[in-house]
Length: 238
Image 1 (cartoon, rainbow, N blue to C red):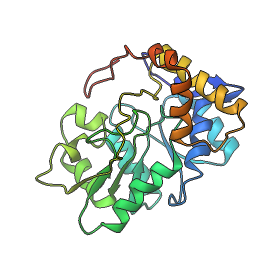
Image 2 (image 1 turned 90 degrees about the horizontal axis):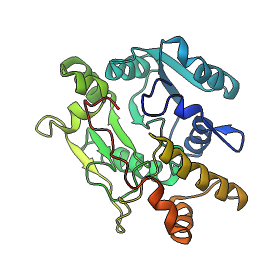
Image 3 (image 1 turned 120 degrees about the vertical axis):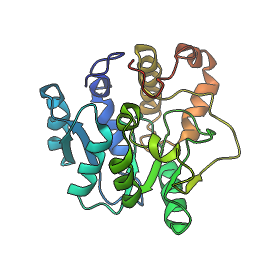
């Protein structure tokens, strides 16, 4: 809730529903995820998130605000996770099929990988980010990472140490990485609101990334709404 670029962004509503609820519904359609846990902070400002979790009967865990790595480790430990799937809360258009593809790659080749994502080399739009890693890797990162940026960004310690962790990558044939479907600014929200409204109008509650791209291709001017936005860099407060 404390985003400096767009305060309260994940609870901003489109057609009467907060973005976080859209995301929870879409993650819930994954065929491979066993449990959804919202890892938020202990600050009072997060109460709307807690209220939403309780209304939707979704588990949550409250931990440190700045040390997100510790929060993740504590949450995963509390719920007895063996495999952790990291999905950031500013991605309301996450595709369940993409989530399942990354998870399945990790599970199928778990003897080869400690971490698998679709973000190391981007071919998917920003906003469809999926990271999957073992509890062992998370525990090691929490124990060894000391840089504040590594503590804030959870997985940076893992993927920045390929000599220690075995990294895997999921890519698709068509490069759609130029599309920005995450919410970090007012412009981002405007685009996502247009897309969700259009998809709702077409009764596509179970839409895929292909449906989203089709709408953007039909409305190419929409892509320009947030094309100028600079993505937040690790260690940089925006």
